[in-house]
Amino acid sequence: MAYYIYILYSQLADKYYVGHTRDITARIAQHLQNDSTKYTGKYKDWEIKSVFYVSEERGDAMRIEKYIKKQKSRKLIEQIINDEKLEGELAHLVRVPHVRD
Image 1 (tube, rainbow, N blue to C red):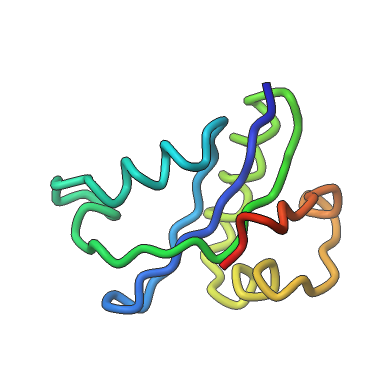
Image 2: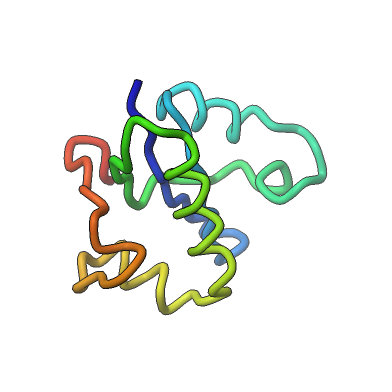
């Protein structure tokens, strides 16, 4: 089964969230219903900015997610969202267009 990287944005928090999943629809619903005080539970206005197919292996998706988060770069996340040329670890990501915006 396919694994995806997704990027969410909260206008209230003015923050991005990066995650991975096999089921985009279910995972986004979980974020929106999350009542915890953890990162996405604090805000209820998360919207999908981008979704990318990674591979059939969860380890690949986890590696890409970790790589993006480790960079701690809003600029990088915005480059990914805006389809700017991606290199290195991110070069093989494939946008899932029907899920965007």
